[in-house]
Length: 175
Image (cartoon, one colour):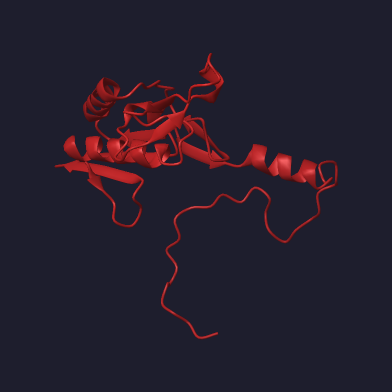
């Protein structure tokens, strides 16, 4: 539970109803660290994580506060935070190893290796590149709508069309 690592910031007391052997006494505990389940726990944890990443030399994006980057020369390292998951990528394996080690010294972490599935996206790493699909999401959606066994319809678009970088004119056009 990542939230137990962060400080509270303000005074919070917890009634210990379930652990009170004598029903005549009212026992109250003063929390010194954020506890899983508190409203402010995720905010406190993210604050501690952000402070740590910035102290390690990372810059927090102004456009997306969950994105942190570190650039040194040609080296780029990116840390993306989603709830309590971190995606770490970059072109410098030594820097990736360094940030993982530094984070592990401050937080309980589990390295799950190469990214395979994230937010409904399936990621496949091959020699030709990285391929992203939503096959599972699409299949689940078709199943929910009762369309899983429907026959495909002939469309004017090639079903095996591969998308690539577009070099078309991007100047504004009137509608």
